[in-house]
Amino acid sequence: MIFQWKFEKATPQMIKSYVKELGISKGLLAKIKFQGGRIEVNGIEQNVLYKLQTDDLLTVQIPDEQEHETLLVDDTPIDVVYEDEHLLVVNKPAGVASIPAQYHPNGTMANRVKGYLKQKNEPNLVIHIVTRLDRGTSGLMLFAKHGFSHALLDVELRTKKVTKMYQALVSGELEKLATSGEIIAPITRDLSSLLKRKVDESGKHAHTDYWVERRSEKVALVNIQLHTGRTHQIRVHFEHLGFPLLGDEMYAGAMDFGMARQALHCRKLAFIHPFSREEMVFLAELPEDMCKIVEKMN
Image (cartoon, rainbow, N blue to C red; front, side, top):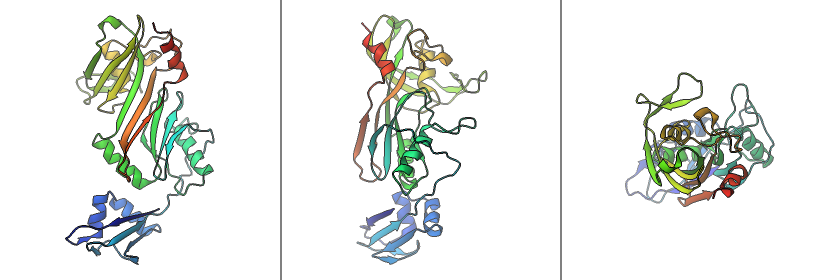
């Protein structure tokens, strides 16, 4: 993959320091040097110590990423919401894990995306997951299609420029559920379980905002925005508040509404495109299992 930049600074600068500002890491520079990449200035190959001058055209060719043979291919179709040469947004169904585990090496979104990319004969076959979801959560996931894109999107994640909005169905004493609220409660591992988390002062800072969109006597549809990304954060925070998610057996959710998984859906994903710098906003409507419950709400 080839990228070009026009150097517009008045003061000369070495290529290695300039590309660092562009988001090219030392590791990526090493791949360019040793795995078939190339750096040119005005069409002439140069090394990273070359000093760029005003109006120089810098061309960087990044080598293709060969697949990891250990990641199996799954040809199950995926629901593509958006795609270009740099990134892929998909709508994940509930019941599908994001990444393989020791005893479940196939059938995940990573396996399915690899199958999709291979079918399209894409040059880069390393799977870069930018945002992941729990197995039981449906909705939008973001993949980078090469390592440079992944690195730039990771910076957006760390600087909180990626927005993820969720919808959940909760139950409990709903007359006590405020129309909107903020949940700030630290989360740590629950030592009684390999998977479960809990609110505890010894945990890491966790911050969740919510707004009730609709409610009935027994169920509320809640819009949620995360400000931190702790494991099971929404599920833990709403159990802590006294309004666990429907179908969430691990966190004391009601199991009599027909939900076979936690009623949680990533509905909105927004970020700045790492190359065009455009604002990208994507929406995914509620899946059928959650819609059926919402339709019955008075």
